[in-house]
Image 1: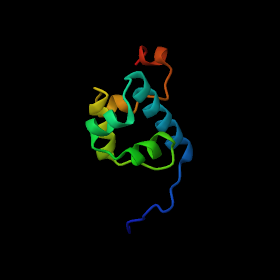
Image 2 (image 1 turned 135 degrees about the horizontal axis):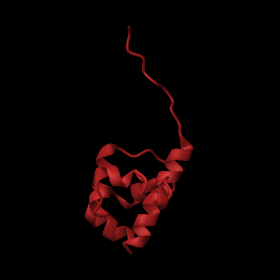
Image 3 (image 1 turned 90 degrees about the vertical axis):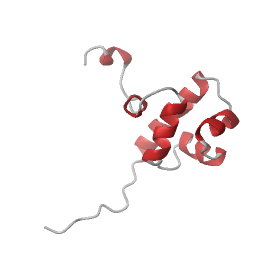
Image 4 (image 1 turned 180 degrees about the vertical axis):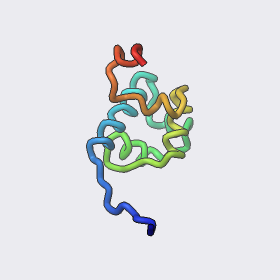
Length: 89
């Protein structure tokens, strides 16, 4: 069976939700963009695009962001769940 490449996957809803989550963490940690840039080495314009949900991010950037927020990579992706639901897992 030939390898099929998925083209033009555009999941704006996921990008926007993830961006809002990153913005929330950014705000809760009281990091300026400059501070987040210093912690992650991700350029400020890229951080803004991620927070605005205007770009997909790489797994490497996600790992770097998780580290900056003192989270594991898995924890970084738990954002679309009600906190009470986490107690039932």
